Image (tube, rainbow, N blue to C red; front, side, top):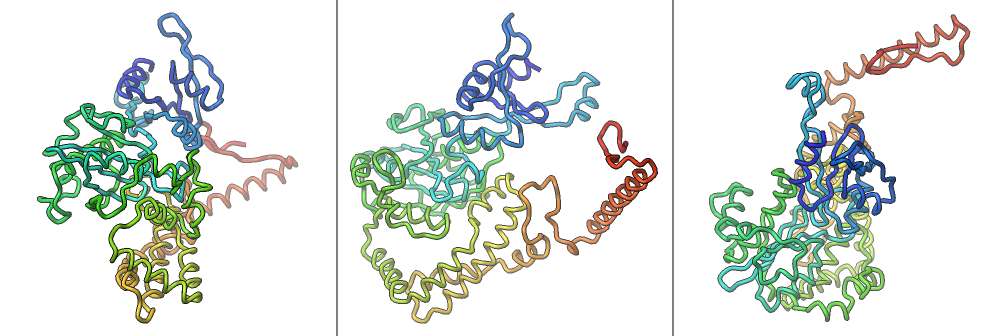
Length: 467
């Protein structure tokens, strides 16, 4: 077992390794010392290595997310080594003493989070990569919790200002980059080759050409390729959902360097807190997605007069019509965070509750689109948005029929498929309920016969049913 652990630890490089053993993730050696101090959990020992006790600590699988959040906040990266077969499969493969196969299935880092409990619902969680080619510079950034993927073409003098604007959770650069000091993680130079990046994007989006997404510079392809390579590395081949990249140029927004941004306290104070900033003072949004969008807009003041005018027309309309304003806010308030729910589902980390949020979010968006579409002489931004909100009717209907009104978080416990959706499932449920009723009746009969009021019939995997 320890040989398997050491091989996985070598693969995990500088990450703390969560090694799955039954209902716990265990950590050993220096990882155990670091985690026990960071998490304030007991440090014990298991066996020996080179004649010395092996330090060990562990966290329960069911509570892993809480511990991960604390480790990520403390600046650590965590590799998750999970069991890739059951004990029965291991014994069938290699006999009674076979070791269950394990593999690193994911590397959890600050910029690659999707779990609801690990994220701030009101802030974007950017992972950024800096690319350089032919004297040009570009920054690719993605929030994999929502799938948003942007490429910003800039120049060397503005790169630090763009990174300050994004305030990414992680910044990736080539180990040979001129911007290595801006990076939190350096990756192999080959990951930032523009030709490799172009091929990587074509594979990701399954297209023969990228022309439909825009005209990308070599630096843009280098940055996007480096970012996708890093996301693929952390996801161990199971790339998260990404929307097609949206190309922007820095001329569209005001360039504000890091020092000026800190002095202005646009999105956070000098101490790094959101509270007390300009964003905190003006934020009256009623959804997490709205708060994230507002933060993005405040961080990047527009330079285009027409775009500013279109926004002001929208503000004027809602200012002049309090009834419309409150009606739309009511519609928005009822919407779940559909972007992040979809991100978890696309990453294979979703739950039945996320499916319920997708159902409710699409239905709520449809209703909002109907409300906005009924506005007479609507501002141009509303006229553009309203039709895009009314769609996916077949999917809404399917999810409404298939799911219970309040799906649970845990899929393993079942109970999230609505009665009447699948006849075979309904039959199995009836049979299970009938079996439970029969056991309860038998238990009551035995209590009456024996006079033992505390008598119970229980079940486990070894003994089966027993008294």
